[in-house]
Length: 32
Image (cartoon, rainbow, N blue to C red; front, side):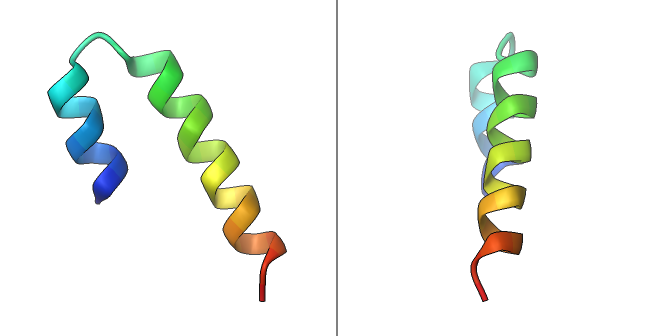
Protein backbone atom coordinates (compact mmCIF):
# COMPACT_ATOMS: atom_id res chain seq x y z
CA UNK A 1 0.00 0.00 0.00
CA UNK A 2 2.80 2.38 0.91
CA UNK A 3 4.62 1.66 -2.34
CA UNK A 4 1.45 2.34 -4.30
CA UNK A 5 1.02 5.67 -2.54
CA UNK A 6 4.61 6.58 -3.31
CA UNK A 7 4.14 5.59 -6.93
CA UNK A 8 1.03 7.71 -7.18
CA UNK A 9 2.88 10.65 -5.67
CA UNK A 10 5.88 10.17 -7.95
CA UNK A 11 3.84 9.45 -11.07
CA UNK A 12 6.81 8.83 -13.34
CA UNK A 13 8.74 6.60 -10.93
CA UNK A 14 7.31 3.37 -12.28
CA UNK A 15 10.55 1.48 -12.81
CA UNK A 16 12.04 2.80 -9.58
CA UNK A 17 8.92 1.84 -7.61
CA UNK A 18 8.92 -1.58 -9.22
CA UNK A 19 12.54 -2.14 -8.26
CA UNK A 20 11.89 -0.90 -4.73
CA UNK A 21 8.84 -3.14 -4.39
CA UNK A 22 10.87 -6.14 -5.51
CA UNK A 23 13.64 -5.36 -3.06
CA UNK A 24 11.12 -4.78 -0.27
CA UNK A 25 9.41 -8.06 -1.08
CA UNK A 26 12.70 -9.94 -1.02
CA UNK A 27 13.70 -8.30 2.25
CA UNK A 28 10.37 -9.18 3.81
CA UNK A 29 10.56 -12.77 2.58
CA UNK A 30 14.16 -13.02 3.81
CA UNK A 31 13.19 -11.84 7.29
CA UNK A 32 11.03 -14.17 9.40
